[in-house]
Length: 216
Image 1 (cartoon, helix red, strand yellow):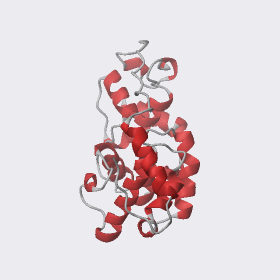
Image 2: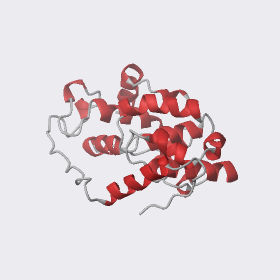
Image 3: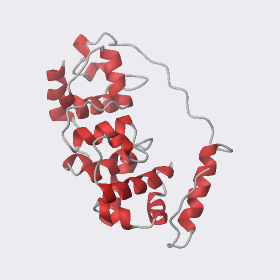
């Protein structure tokens, strides 16, 4: 099954800008941006971000308010604060062996940077990957990471999978099934997310000398 998946990926894999580098900082930027933001929105902003801050040291030296301003439009601006904090940690101490020690870096993001930047033998499991693994009932090796992501994003869709064009369909026990939509996130109005967003907007509007951020 993995051989069929990798063959499919060679032809149908997405050409994404962060896949053209093994710089851990650039990969981290992409993975943080991709948390809860669609690829089509991330691609141009990823390029803009790296043009402005091409290295982890350049981001670490920038005021956090600048990072928040540059993040506007991607949503969940707290990610910009955490990315800035992570850059400062790396600039001061280097990359930790356990990347979850960095601010805002969870298990998936740590595994993605480990695999795609450092070449470590781990399989990052995002929502798309987990969906394919669950439906096929198979395990795949670390080399299949990006292929699984693309299959889940473009073929093995959440509600109506495109089984007719899936390279794994012949051996997939879930072939032809339909799936219920996941429950949407609650409303923003009055939520802690809204209060954090307002706080970060205020930080972004402060003079450049302001760097401390205290979130509700």
